Amino acid sequence: MIARIKQFLGMEAKPDKLASQEEVEKVAEEKAKLRIGYIHLSGCTGDVMSLSENYDILAPLLTEMVEVVYGQTLVDRWDIPEMDIALIEGSVCLQDEHSLHELMEVREKAGLVVAFGSCAATGCFTRFSRGGQQANPNHESFVPIADLIKVDLSMPGCPPSPEIIAKTVVAAINGDMDYLQPMMDLVGYTEACGCDLQLKVVNQALCIGCGTCAMACQTRALDMTDGRPELNENRCVKCGICYVQCPRSWWPAERINQDLGL
Amino acid sequence: MVLGSYKEITLARSTDKLIQSISQDGGIASGLLCYALDEKIIDGAVVAGPSDEMWKPKATVALTSDEVLAAAGTKYTLCPNNMVLKEAVRQYGLEKVGIVTIPCQTMGLRKMQSYPFGVRFMADKIALNIGICCTENFSFESLRTFISAKAGVDFDLVEKMDIGKGKFWVKTQDGLINFPIKETHGYEQNGCKVCLDLVSELSDISTGSIGAPDDWSAVQVRTDIGDSVFKQALEAGAVETKPIDEGKFGLEMLTKLAKSKKEKAMKVIDERKAMGLPVPYKASSEKEDPLANI
Image 1 (spheres, rainbow over the protein chains, first blue to last red):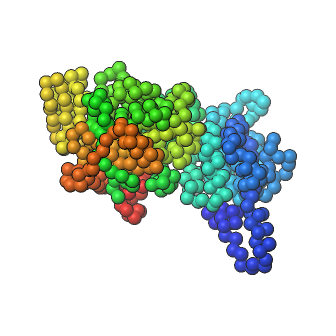
Image 2: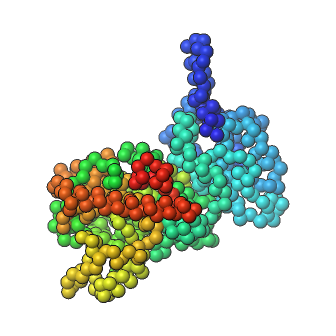
Image 3: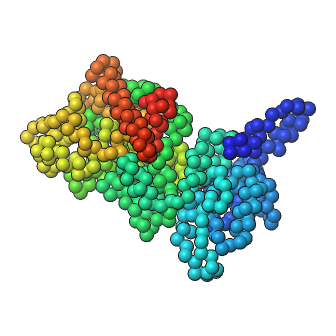
């Protein structure tokens, strides 16, 4: 996996035959722009809207650092081209043949597949689907994309914040694998629920009542009662953000020290 | 480095007489927040404010010095300050938030800043984080139980609680009652047992009573932000400092207690790992410095 990112980012490109300076520069120029595709499965478009909220860096990002090579509404192209990174938004509907095909094809064409947002990563809100609705009553079963294909990075969030999207794209461009490691680790976290706090933190004698989960919850399904998270199941969309942000689920100490200059 | 990395360690206290009279030790958290509010370094602060119930804090957004002072003093029970950060930024619309946190809350805050997965436009709103030293914390019922059982007083009569010199102190109108801090063991919340951080190693400025004489705080200035705010407050005369005693009641004591908290926690972490229980930290065999907060 790491080798693949490095390969795609040109980090392993060894200039063994330095024919000319021009050629090296040409390679550098070609490698510089990361080809990104955006694939829209069963999601609400909120994730890509969050991406576009990076006003400060969006223009240089799109003009200098990345090239969006595929994406409904973004690029006028029907066939899926080769790409370095595929941002896949939405879970995949098992009854939707087109989605299944697209997903499989993207896996073949993309270097890195990112489960972009909680629907792709954990199923999120689509986990509640039972079918029997318009426009297609037969569309009943929605699963996170990692159930069907190998996913390289998981970026949960409903939606993921503009900041984490920017940080991730920049880390990918820089080949900053340390930053991306937690997202690789989160790929296996496909069955999420607010009750994970109780099961995986409180029941495991790890909760310290800091309130980070309740702050992170994007639907305000969490409150703190007697120093412990209390879940309102009626509001929980199973995005997994509460558990992902909990300081007791995983702990990126080195990165934090680095970010703080400590 | 059992005290985390820091630029400066010193004794300090607020110069404000009112703050001195109501704060826990040197009034550094209150003093710095009031100063930062006055100077518009922050436009509000998340603090452990009062609730309807005596000694039960409520995470609160303070917009004025008066509201900060209403939160002065230590409450030895859980107060989920991080939760209210969202309120401070969204409802109150604050752009520069000060927040007082104990070590575990500091860790939640910093993780959110480095990896703001679902936390939109909040990471950059934290203008000042004051970390409080913490040995352990208690659920409200634990606190009430051991105060009434060990000190034999009703909660409503307690004027101040303090931990120091190996004892838990309870001040009432009639005097000072104490019992060994050891007797509170078994009441502390379980999550504290794997905590490797006594001194809020990741805060901008951390403060606590350990290693400081009465009415002073031992302060560690850690980040550039912390350095800048602390220097300004010092220059403005909002706080005063004096060198920390290097000896056994000063730095030596702080170092000893920080180390002992880490050693105790590492033992539990290693035991948990051996049992196959989850824990977010590395086992002692997995890290270079077995006491590092990683």
